[in-house]
Length: 116
Ligand code: HEC
Ligand code: HEC
Ligand code: HEC
Ligand code: HEC
Image 1: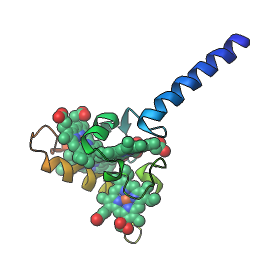
Image 2: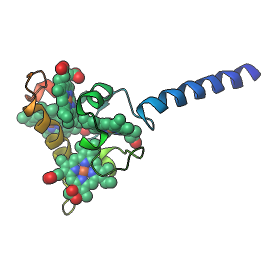
Image 3: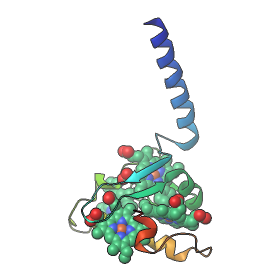
């Protein structure tokens, strides 16, 4: 039991010290699978994208620093007033930046993001 408690405190220490570097509990690599009806899920390297975008606000446009939420916290299956549907929220944010990528490494075709 004591050993387990020590293990937990190490896990907590590591978690929190890592948290200080990237903020809150920002994910590293995730697979976006919020909608999942017709297209395969989209792997998303959150850490690499944070470096590319430089500012969290580029994507987390409504959240205060350190309070970033998933897009699905506000964007739902259907648009609500000015709040576009979740699919549009992703497509606009992701594709607009990819189209501007001079290196052409950012995927713009469907299966570049929706990998099988
Ligand atoms: C830059 C990345 C990107 C590209 C390019 C892209 N998508 Fe998506 N798309 C996403 C993300 C992220 C989601 C949300 C996935 C989820 O939550 O399952 C999504 C969701 C969807 C959904 C709703 C989910 C579902 O399973 O029904 C459809 C349909 C879709 N995309 C079709 C397309 C089509 C068609 C193309 C090509 C014309 C395309 N996408 C290109 C990123 C992309
Ligand atoms: C290129 C776009 C982009 C940038 C830049 C970005 N994020 Fe994110 N972040 C996302 C997306 C998309 C998700 C949600 C993925 C999902 O729905 O599974 C997310 C999820 C998160 C989550 C998880 C929220 C939860 O409730 O699970 C946190 C925390 C977070 N981001 C923090 C940050 C912080 C802090 C920064 C800046 C250092 C940052 N993000 C930069 C796109 C981005
Ligand atoms: C706290 C609520 C909230 C969260 C979280 C949120 N949004 Fe939004 N979003 C909104 C609202 C409200 C609008 C309506 C337009 C406006 O007021 O700017 C919007 C509009 C948008 C638009 C349309 C902008 C335009 O100019 O047409 C995009 C794209 C978008 N959000 C992407 C995202 C993405 C991607 C995420 C997650 C990384 C996200 N949003 C998280 C509330 C939110
Ligand atoms: C601020 C600009 C920007 C935004 C916003 C952005 N991306 Fe990217 N993305 C890039 C760039 C630049 C690359 C190419 C990176 C490289 O050099 O390989 C890339 C590469 C990718 C790749 C292929 C490489 C990999 O990591 O597997 C995927 C998949 C991807 N992005 C998905 C997304 C999704 C999904 C979103 C929206 C949630 C998104 N991106 C939003 C700029 C962006």
